[in-house]
Length: 398
Image 1 (cartoon, helix red, strand yellow):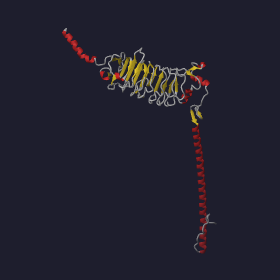
Image 2 (cartoon, one colour; image 1 turned 60 degrees about the vertical axis):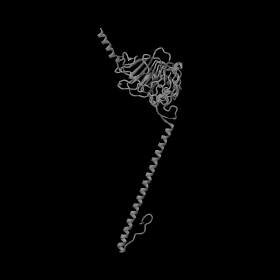
Image 3 (cartoon, helix red, strand yellow; image 1 turned 90 degrees about the horizontal axis):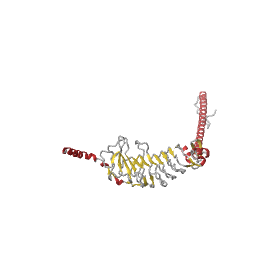
Image 4 (cartoon, one colour; image 1 turned 180 degrees about the horizontal axis):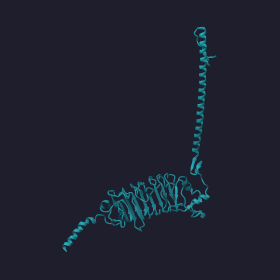
């Protein structure tokens, strides 16, 4: 009996380092069989600050913090900066899932400063009372997802210091995705203006009833934009003016007010080669309710040519020559014609002058020949050497 007890004690001593190799409250995500299994840490079960060095058998490449309450701040973590041993099949990511039933949640400024190499951040079901300035400061992400929950207040500088760019990392989507997360009030002006390299922006199910003209300022790399499933009745003309790379917009599931001024974006998308996916539906007037906005546009609104409201000449359905350009082209044609005529006149004058010169030369040669012949005859008859007469202006006479 004593021998068995000694054996058990020794076995426990040997296994103790392995049993305590990872922080309490952190386990491999149950039911996941990926090559790199996410590590799931339950809020309140692990000691803070949680350090990357405290993990020895669990991977820190795909961290999931679940049942989170109250707040997420940089003080809760320490130096998750190493990427040694990380797989290229999965991005370095963090997921924060809030506990069901909580009424408020807060993020601190620079909340992710201890995760400098993370490339995907996902926030799920967090009823955020505020997103302060510089929450994501210092991060370069392929994808930032905020899904579920709500946002009571979002600072104009929330995304200051954040870079979102396409890194070609294995992922279904990339860019900034805020989805099914009602926002109180309107989005601050120029909220996304620092995200100049972002290519995808999804703002779906946010309860938005207004977009400022400057909402999409500086988004010169943006290719896809969605603000479907909101409460927008119209958008201000010119709101897409800086979106030079834009190829597709999804504005479906909004209660559009259909009149010819409010539907300006139909002509705009057509003549800028932008695809409208889904197709917006009218909420008013009543006779067009639940019908496509394009139907109202085709049946009611006067059609603009390719020049729209600009002064110019439409030479094709989607091609316009502006008046200033048209005048420039006409002037160029006139200059070319005048130049061609002048060149023709110069060539003709030169030919005529050469012909006159040739005639005079031939005339002089003929006159001189006759003079020489007469001189030879006189010398033969008189035996005296003859001198030629002095020529006139037109040569030697007969």
